[in-house]
Each structure stands twice: as C-alpha cells, then as structure tokens.
Image 1 (cartoon, helix red, strand yellow):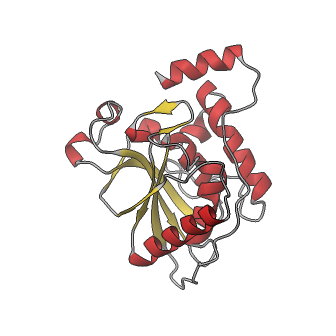
Image 2 (cartoon, rainbow, N blue to C red; image 1 turned 180 degrees about the vertical axis):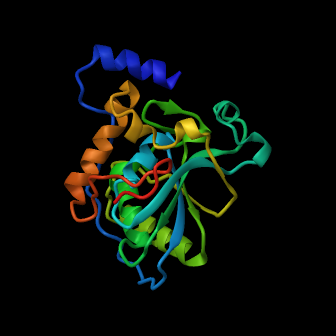
Length: 224
C-alpha cells in the first residue's frame, strides 16, 4: 500500500521529498569506545531508508535490514506488515567505534533518519511496525541514548515531544534478500526517490565528514 501511495504522489507532486531533517546538537554524553567493532539496532520507519542512510556512513561496515521486537515465527515481511507481530522494521548496524561513535550514529538518526515525534508511523508509513526504537545492545548504549533524548528534549530540538523508545536488545531477524540494499539498487523507485534519497542528501550536507559516496552493501560486501 505504501508503495502504491508514493507512486501516485510521485506522479502528482513536485519532487520535494518527504524526509524530515533537523539540525540537532551532538550528544554531550558520548564516552570513547576502544573496541574495533560494535553493533547497534535502530528502527525508524521503513528499513529501506534507514539502511540506505547508514550504508553511506563512514565507519559502518554493514547495515542489514530486518525485524526486531517479535518472534522468529512471524519475522516475515508480509506478516510483519499486518502490524500485529510486535516487530518493528529495523536495521542492524555493525560499525567501528574508532571511526564513528555510537553517539554519532544516534545524532544521524535524529537529524536525518527518523522523525522522533511521530508515534507508530513514519512519514507515509502507518503502523507499529514503523515505530521509532533504539534497541540498546548494552547498558552503556542505553545510557547514551537516554541521556541524548533528554538533552534534545531540554534543547527543544523538535517542535513536539520525542516519542522514540529506548528498549533492551531483542533478537534481530534478517529481512528477505529482496529488501537488502533496496535504496542502492533502486534509487529511482518512486518511494525511494521521493522519501529516502532526500535523507541521504541530508546526510551528505549535514555530516560531510562522515559521508561516504560509495556505500557499503549487504549483497556485494564492503565498498572499497
């Protein structure tokens, strides 16, 4: 349904994009991490756009689209799309914290990836499967996320209250292969061109030092 809706909008509306971007302060609490590889799981609407953004971030070695919040038996796209499984469309991000910190991943999340004021929907996509959630993999990640949300709230960085949840890590189930790297493989697809390409452009504009023009992909491996 969302794809049909966006195709109709794409044909009827000038290409201005649906992406909501914001200038947000960097996280004040962002302790250094000396590890060479960590993971983060983020939900912020359709996983095509979330994955597409993080595939263009330096220090990210992989960003996989999938499902988090429900059971393994219901982790299939058509079932998750009913909004009854507890899953949220999610992206599992593997990153090198010596190049990009967890706090910087969250800064990108709040600035260009998701609108944290939208409850159980993102842009044209409606349902609990599109809710915004930070799935904390460690107590430190939870602390960083909670403190950052408090910081953004105190600074009134958004015109409405932040409703993004910070939840404990739950199992991540990889999505079907046809969803992987969807933005990279189909940049002209109407939904992507209208809703998600503007997010990648905002990433480049707002975070030029963290932007990589050649994305790292799931199906082809790490970019050179």
